[in-house]
Image (tube, rainbow, N blue to C red):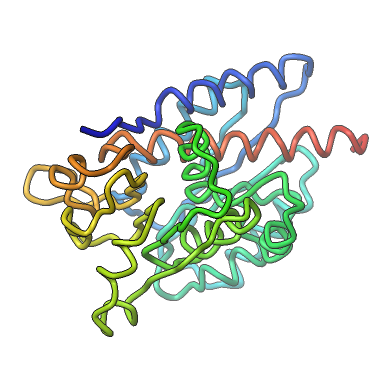
Length: 284
């Protein structure tokens, strides 16, 4: 039976550290969240962001933009936020309407106000190992790995999923720790090699968004399994890994829900606090 890697304890420590770091300042950081159109799936995240911001002493403000807003209008709002000295950081809630390009939106945000760490400048710092902020979910995975006290140095780490917000930045973060990293994706599966990669993983991170895509029988004995996937199946929320069978073989495994999720928003707040502290050091 494996040890459960719940995200709440690590999230509590992060929030405590943020409160401590900000306690010396009369002025508090301000996070602006932009919601473009109405999307029920983002409402839960928005409420959680507002709650956690309040808990650590960060001002949180939600601004809404109409569903059919053209790129020029959205960029205009972001440009104004970039110039507003009272705004510490901003985040654009995903998903965005189809007429908008989320990558162009990320590039428009001032990297010094990039709450999600997704601007090319911040991703470049991540690649060089010279970073203070990073993509929230990828950073949450690293926090969970640290909680195991297992040194990733030289370990075979397999990431299933190569998205810009999880797989790709996570590969860089693990490489910075000298892990031996393999990244699998749809082409790996189409070649029939996904199971082979999973079986050699001492550390397995899965972020696909497909329930049960990783079979429990593939899990290496004693592996650390971090399941980023959140999928609704009937009235249940499940991950990308077959939990019951994987739990019997893994040394550590994240529950879904309750694993990576609770940490992600805490990392977002840590990013905002880090941007605020960095700006304060510069005297701006």
